[in-house]
Image 1 (tube, helix red, strand yellow):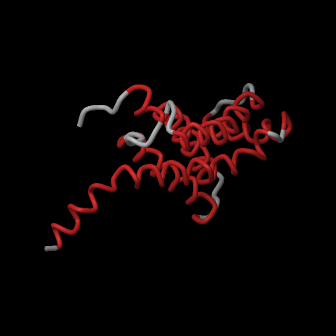
Image 2 (cartoon, one colour):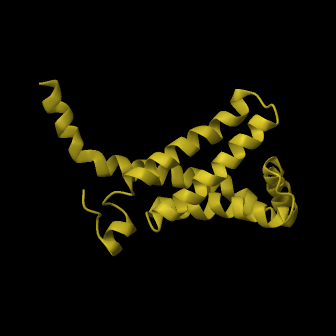
Length: 144
């Protein structure tokens, strides 16, 4: 009986992917907007996170890329267009943010959001955007 009830929920898998994509996409657009509009000073500060990996050149570029990944990646994720590419950028950005905080000795509460986002984005990367996405409409659904 319980298995039958769970099997009936399977038909909502694509609805769940839509909710996750749109919800996370919009949230990351909201996180990224102040960074995108912050300009070179903000981007330089963000790009300084790359020094955690010994990359000390072009902090403005790296900061802009992080802001773009959050806002632009969030937008692409929400509409389900070029989803896996957007998710790859978001995963990398969240890994960098997590490791920057961990290397800086920050408390769990400071880096856990970035780590959780990296986990969710990786899961969405592996599952794909679902049938309620522009990717599915334009390129067809991948075979199961």
